[in-house]
Image (cartoon, rainbow, N blue to C red):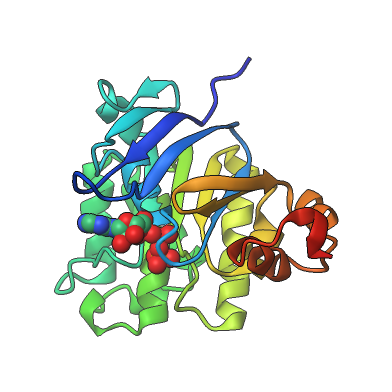
Length: 250
Ligand SMILES: Nc1ncnc2c1ncn2[C@@H]1O[C@H](COP(=O)(O)OP(=O)(O)OP(=O)(O)O)[C@@H](O)[C@H]1O
């Protein structure tokens, strides 16, 4: 069997002794070539999960194997082939867009960097902002730079926390197309934490519904719609968030 993009076993995080776990026994195996969604209300544990998958946060228990490498012992081998975008991580704001991409390109040892940066500027409609300091961009423009940065090393595994949160509907739409194109061309796997149900329905082949740090349901968007007798994922989400059982949801 092909090495999975992510193998997560009984992953747990408790921030302080005595606290309820923020992530509680998360277990899943995500294959290469697919986009999965991590859905859940505020405080469900999405960002904590992503931080542990990236090795930014040490788990209290359990195991993460990314692209075949155990994150506890072989983190750097995995990270070279991973990347992420998060609205919570600011780009160096005095550096221009191009300089930002160059810094990250060097960190990842990207070959033929000039060409890669030109491609990304083009793909994310950033060419006209290439020489502008990142601190002088709108929120939506910064988000596009963050996504360009996330693809700079052609990652095999991409973790996206709210990738289109600050984008207007039209820009959000073409950014989703760009991500979908990247996945199809590269065979990469993507895990997407989002509050945008339409985005999840469009991009994800499998959804993990998180509540109180646990997976309370999962399946393809179609499976979930069918099981809850709903027309869109937003309604399924509300059923789960409000603790309505699937049998009685319809
Ligand atoms: N640094 C921290 N110290 C202590 N508790 C934390 C810390 N970060 C998060 N938590 C707690 O862990 C739980 C999960 O938070 P997390 O940020 O992972 O949720 P989330 O699903 O990403 O939420 P949101 O949709 O609001 O971004 C919450 O109860 C939160 O208060």
